[in-house]
Length: 543
Image (cartoon, rainbow, N blue to C red; front, side, top):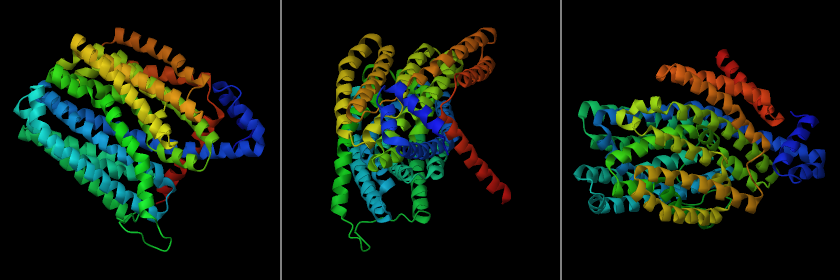
């Protein structure tokens, strides 16, 4: 599958990143050890890249459906009611994200567990998550009047908040089931459930609730209903196809130690749950800040900015679909060298994709935001900051996941508490003085600071870091992309110019990357995936 020349080239690539480390390890270990590392790397890359390749179309569809859902609400109810909807939903999501700290153990332990352990782990995790979600949802429901009074948002906001509070278990249930699918590397069912079925059903609910009923509260209730329904549908697939059944007691002859299994699960996830208070404050704490100091319109503008700039995250989201179980397996099996090289390759692929996605969003920001109405176009300059924030969040690849999958969740907890402390100290003064611009500035600072510190911690603890000299090739290739896009925008303003400029820019970007060259690992990966998909197409054509 690989030649000696390719292996030598790969070692040179690592030597560029960490001089005197990986290259010396390869040569010291001899050809057999190098071949074993390369084989393990190729297998891990294929699994991650296959999940990403299958996920990209479904993620694009998901994002498109989500944008359409948002556009339906912003155009059907205007910016202010949508802002209340977004604020209430984000407050509920704030609590859901904290609860979902308990789900990460599924991706960590399911890949290497036997069938009985998988059933026990999935059952315990589901009961734990739903139990905590019920408690958090009840607390939010009871706190809704006080939150509404503090935010001074009125009766509609209180009703929306209570509806979302009641739906907290439904939200957590959907993401619990999809995490089981991820842990089992069920690529197709995961994407069908999370990327297609739910956003399509959500859009249908939005259309009916907006144009036929005309009640945004009905939209909120419908969204939560379809979350629960889609989650149960995915659970049914796991039961019928994977044979995954609830397990509260040990079975068989191997003497499964359920208490020990549960203790191990809690030992791994409790720091992540506690850290969830910090990480969720970083991601969603801006919405309570907006609710207290700014208007519902500001909340809607911020939500749309996060949504649109989130499109830039597509490459990282695709890679992250199945890197948790792959990284967990490499960690358990002691393949640290393969894990290090996997991180180099995947982080570079992410940077190439994020740069390609970010350039047109920045240059054609007015055309992009015009989809949501004139109120949002007025805030187009802020979209630049949102995209730059996402670039900082993605440039280092799957750093947070690798910290978790290498069992450094306690260090991750410390990092996130530190970042949250910095955010609290800086965000409130910035918001009070500069309004929505200050909130966006805090958002940018948080993402860059968070990922920078996580990279340093991961390198200190595990010797893993993402960067090689080839990472700079994406930035070099972006130069002709930017120049072409700006030229076309000047000659042909409007949506048509945006499409033409983006298309020509992509061609220039890809051509420049091709001239700069790809590594042997990347070429082997492309060849393996093409052979795999040709075989699938051939099998389908014979049926």
